[in-house]
Image (cartoon, rainbow, N blue to C red; front, side, top):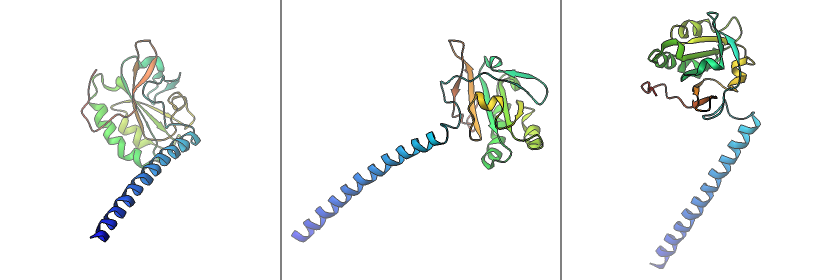
Amino acid sequence: MPFLIAALVLVGLLCALDLVLTLGVVKRMREHTALLTDLNGGPASVKAGEEVGEFTASTVHGEVMSREMMAEETLVAFFSPNCGPCREKMPKFVAYASKLPGGRARALAVIVSGPEEGAEFVDALAPVARVVRETPDGALGAAFRARAYPIVLTVAQGRDGRVVVTDDQVALDRPVVTA
């Protein structure tokens, strides 16, 4: 019987030690994630509550877009034709944007590519959103600090008049909610 008690105490101590070491590893992984994010220039885009930078851009239909045109809540997405997750998320964006009250005026899609790429993205997005095509160093990418794709955000004018990101994790598979 004493051997059984000793074995049980030993197993209990080993489990407690394992738990402490696992918690230490999780804490260390969080620190490393923060360090890697900083090395890559920060987060993939502006975050909720942050102000959108100034920009002026032309859509594929010749409309001039600027930050001031986003006074009402606007759905904004960045896609790249060379990105697998973008190809998966784009149909969800199209379905979500098609249900927005206010139609195309409430959605903006940015296709980050060269001039000869992304025609299928333009064709799919143009019926439901204003579409801007730009290079990775374009005005909209700079204003939203876009570093990875796809990005889907909502922006609106805050009480203080600044255009800010209201949601940086838009769930495209949920029903459209109006404010």
